[in-house]
Image (cartoon, rainbow, N blue to C red; front, side, top):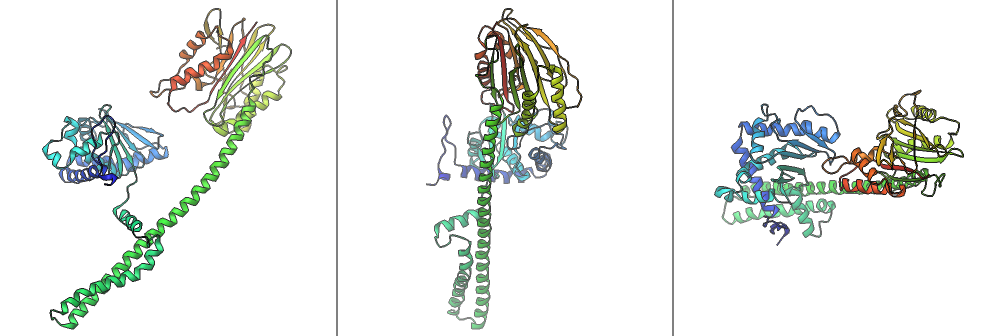
Length: 537
């Protein structure tokens, strides 16, 4: 028994009819719906909605372009998926009012469409939905529905495997009212027949076999056709008439057979040629991917070398640095560093560059070079940030900029001078004795690299033994879970207060673990970087 003839049993569910039977029943339902709906209001709205999906909404979602449609929808970058809520605002008084009422009546609250769908697929799925409307509303298909096989369509539609119809995978989740339609490969009957024939007849293993066999099979067809006139001659009609008619029929049959075999050969030739081209391009892509991965790995190692290692601790008796850098990609757009300025000062810098990947890493290299080469013992923090801003404005594109925080701590005076160039969240100080977090709002300027000559101001604060200076990139507070809830500044400050008595060494990992627990399996699109400087005495 073939796979398509078997019953599919899913965990926790009743047996689901085979995809083949449910597909046939769904196809019959779509044809019946076409006849019954005809030019009704609902039928016209289904047709118009399907065309608008193919002509406007779905192409715009695939290309990431704005759509001319005024439908309320959300285009997601999950293979160009369009999510359309079916609420009262779904043109209730417009051209799709009847369609919206029908969808809501069967429990559909949102429609999720694959960007590769065509109008006929969307239309056929809506017709199938109309065919099983009673089952969706009441959970029963009725006697007439059982005769048409709608029970199998309904069970497949609401199962975890879904229904395969109209060359699409369709699944309805009644508990959340979501109807998902994704395009899938659907081989045609002609293609399946030729493939099956080639598998069973070993002589036909490529397109050349069909071209070579065409004359032979044409002659065979013609000869077989002549058998009928030969049999008629035994009855006694005129020899000339029988032979004439037989010759014409035999010639037509032979030519038709030759044409069919050569057509199949031509189709197979195209398939084989395309398969070879795809294989060559696939191999080329693999080589390119390996080259890119090698370059990215080198860039990752270089960028890792740009940030200080755990053993670098300027003034180890006075302050202790702890830090962590988790890029979204192999390389990231975050950068931090610290170094001894003179015999009693240490400088700390954190930059969050616009964009990610290689472009962001390139800009962080520029900032690293400036931080390494500039003598911060002679250059005030505000002037240094201004110089970095001018360099970025001159060397990088207009859409490239960086949020920068530079702080210089004097271990003798316990003063922290800092400059904030558009960085959010603001630098923070965890006051251990007061067990509170103080946001350093004394300096705020434009992000670096936007406009040459941008002025920056320096601010200053006093630190005490046990206090911690904390800076992190916005990837920390903007980390979102699957429901879209951000980690947030308030949650970060609670963690900082809760770890006020703990050493700086454990704080970055503690915060990143809490962030990971909050995010879960939700995809992220930003780097996560945090730097902590603890005053020891």
